Structure formats: C-alpha cells, structure tokens
Image (tube, rainbow, N blue to C red; front, side, top):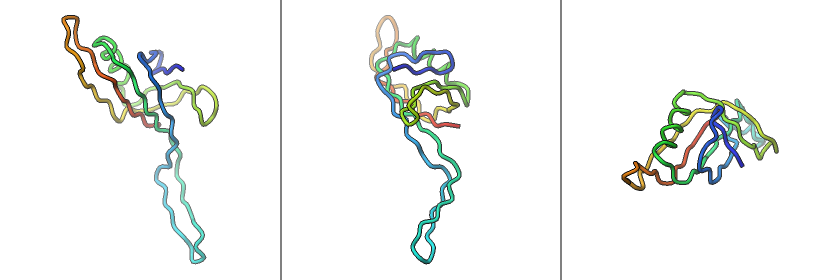
Length: 116
C-alpha cells in the first residue's frame, strides 16, 4: 500500500482510512414522514497513520503539505482503484518522541486530509 503527496512517497505509512462524508446536507421530512435530502456534495476524508519519523522525514512531509491544496494518490477502497484527488491537511500534529544527538524523532503521526 502506497500513498503519495504529489510525487513524494509518504514515509513510514502504517495504514489509512478513506471515509466518504456528505457535506452541506440538509435532511427534512414531509407530512408523510418521507425523508427529503438536499445533498450538495460527497467528499472523502483520509485519515493517515504514520510510524515514527525522523526530523528530515517530518521536514519533507511538512514541505509537501505546505500548500493549501495538494494532489494525493492512493488506493480508494470505495472505488476499488488507485486515484488522484486534491486534498488539504486539516490536522497535522507533530509529537516529539525522542531527542537524540542525531536530531528529533517524531512519534506516530496521524494526519487528517479533506478532499477539495
């Protein structure tokens, strides 16, 4: 399983989930109790878990996700194929695990990306 941010292969990938969300959806019911839905858009949320990262890997990851929107290539289990779509990074913690003479080591990192 591989994941790319642009041309950058994401390091230390443990796993990810691709969840479809409905955005700006309004649900109402008519007098008969039938549901009426105003569905504006369905978008993916990718939640990515990475293993420990070196300072150099974290720096490269941050550089690749610095733009507001960037391309992400991944296997979409909902479509059953590899796709490329545009995402933005909504959550990107950087929890330090170790400080060594060689530099920082970051603990497992969870990234949350939302489709444009």
